Length: 449
Ligand code: AMP
Image (cartoon, rainbow, N blue to C red; front, side, top):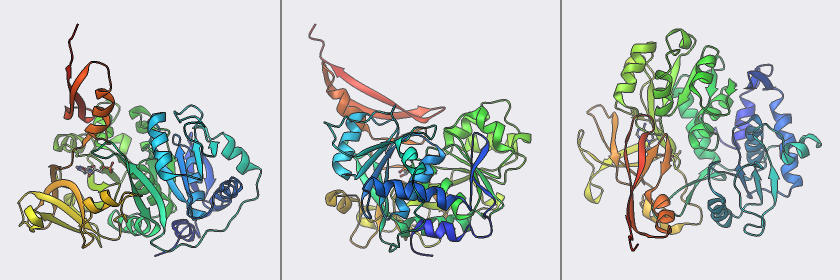
């Protein structure tokens, strides 16, 4: 399957037109037959604002159906979607604007963004409640139902991940990267139009955007969308869906709620966890409470999903991330890239149709992470068992994962070092019962007083 991801989604919706595509505040807001016209109005609005094929559109707002329409409209225009963590500061956004040079910044009025003088770029607003200048403009326009033809290698999105030097790197993901990955997940996790997904992940992150949303759109599922994760809100809705995806923190928080039991998950066929290691103790407690074995998978922004445990209950094993997805090759290597035998721990290298083309305007960072043969150095360490099943044991990259979000020590060290009186600072991760890892800074201060 190749071409524009949006055209791929629409082609798969034939015959499911009357099914709700998105539910928000527990009510259907658009069905699959109506989705192209709604997205088409946003496409027309983007064009009216000057967005052309190949342009970057930066989006900094919270989950909402309009976030999804904007995303699909950017892709349908042949433009490149650049989502940003809603928590980024104005100074961080200014750096990303300088780097990505977007034709348009779509943001919520309440979210921090730099002012016009610091970052001159055309802007439109999109509030978490779905209001704003972009939806207002879209509502006045005739839908543009066309979908720009693209080649598999054409960029669909750039997702910024922070770097070890504190400078963000934009992973360049193509339509082909994303369509091959959703097709592989569809097979691996037995998806069908009978499924409905409860979506509480942030849409600005690869997990929420490329895994949960894409699977729903690829399968004409109903997507029950939440603004964010909240254990009670999730428990109240689990009985209406068949699939839930989350980071390990979500599972620990569900278990902490006494209302979470077997009856609450009666309609569920699949719980998926990823973005950080799922503790075997959480896996076991979850199985004991609900009868469900959580299916753990491994991925990263640069390659979306890489491995998955087998779908069958017995194949969902605690402490492993399973096997490489079809088409993905994964090697464990030692010094000088020597392939290591089963059981030996080394660096994880990958290659496949899911792997991004490199980092936006960062040839030196791209050269550091990609070998000449196209293999990518993940910075994660792990081993394979005799059957080829992968376990992750740590990271060679300097990274803390807190609640599923990546924190690079340099991101915290650089601003801390600027605080008056701070002489030296080192930031590291420590185990945390809820977030998996917490961020701790050791600081030397000048006590001249
Ligand atoms: P991100 O780019 O934010 O998706 O973060 C990717 C990183 O999260 C990977 O390089 C791993 O270090 C980590 N990660 C993702 N999934 C898992 C998992 N199932 N187990 C352990 N670490 C994981």
